[in-house]
Length: 187
Image (cartoon, rainbow, N blue to C red; front, side, top):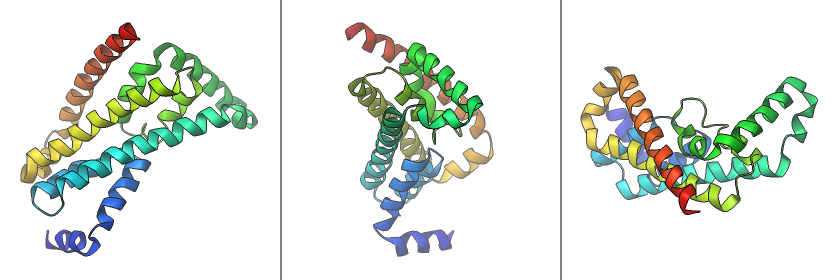
């Protein structure tokens, strides 16, 4: 795809800023494709990795801080939404750390995923450690998978990536659960 190569080359370092901003906003497949581009020499792997990781951590911090600062009071205008947030707060106080580790892997949940965590009683320092561990894992999985698969990433996406994504989600959830249990035992 020569047009893509030309676009990447014309953007220069701005591509890493765009990747960072994308990762602040959501957790789609762009980091995977950036890994592929790095493997093909179009992007620098270290800059891709840092942009994705920084975007993932920044997004969590922003959403957590907003929820912590504004709580559920702003939602009082919408009773159904308010009740849902209150229910979410209860669930987060019970299951917050495992959720915090895996929410970014569920399609569509990343954009609002850290908001419920901010409503819970999770301490900010614990949030930051678990969030950073999750963002690091997410970055390594997506960018690393893109880099390793290289040219075969496109055919993997077309032929069964959904199954691969499900397997990765289960593996990450299991890893997260064990990590959180160990973290709670040591805290």
